Image (tube, rainbow over all chains, first blue to last red):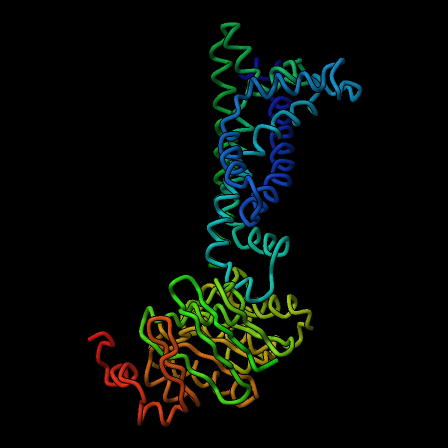
Length: 222
Length: 222
């Protein structure tokens, strides 16, 4: 089986998978945390609707997101000129769309709980608006790790969207999940299973590392 | 910035329309049983709540601070908690250490604030207020959840504020504390100011039956 792994250039597939998922998590965190904080702290008309929408978007079907991003990036689409379709860039975009609502919705809940606790004190000290939101993001940082991990979990496990916008091209856009799907349909179950084990091991390792860092920091800062 | 003038101020059914001037100088104790409306009155004066009706006005602008029954500490070091307040107030961070010295917390300056004991956290809340050199300091039952020795330490810091010229406005249901720290007493009963008198006279010759009953430790509705 090791030979087949070598033929498949498994290493490249693993690295590309990580690159795509981590890039998407990074982008989605940069977008999702401020969005979650704004909804948590802001008082604007339609706020309840925004919360319902955010929570509902956590369950976006990956294939639908893939299709939407495909239409956007296809040659005739509004962003067709960028030539991103069937590149890792397109996969990052699709996964970012998928997991931004997850990170934003979970962050919103954590930050709103903190705001309830902190509001009087922060207002008394004169913090409001963006300043208060940034303070809350920093103070809930340990809870937000969990939100980001949830996003990472979704991104690394996802197959539908990356399959549609990436095309599962060997050596270009083939990642672990699309490899598993392909090998399963070809009937090479041992290989599919082997890649699956590698994927699960990587996800476990990332979560364990994040949890260790979080717990150590939490013990230190209370 | 004093006097602070409340004209026919009411808040829902908690504070019945009341008019009150808070003058500069001697410390004011707002005394009353649980549920009398002390905390709401403090929040109205500090500006955390807007009155349902009536007008609250300061004679000029100036700095005010508030210390709550349960101190809210930011998830950062003791020193950084004070620096945070100074920065929000547009003041230099140098004053933070001096404020910690005032409350006897210099040796804990670099500890995470959230791992301090309840009494230490309340002293840190006072240091945060001290650094701002407020003209008026509102205290809402600052020792209600502290043991006697922590209470003594907090009261010593409150006296230091008083000696430094800060106007103290403190809500408490603790008769001993009101006697120790109060120059004048405003007695609140079911959202109304029932009696206002110099502390000596209030405790020796209360003018109203409600105040007399409260001092004797009887249930005010008994």
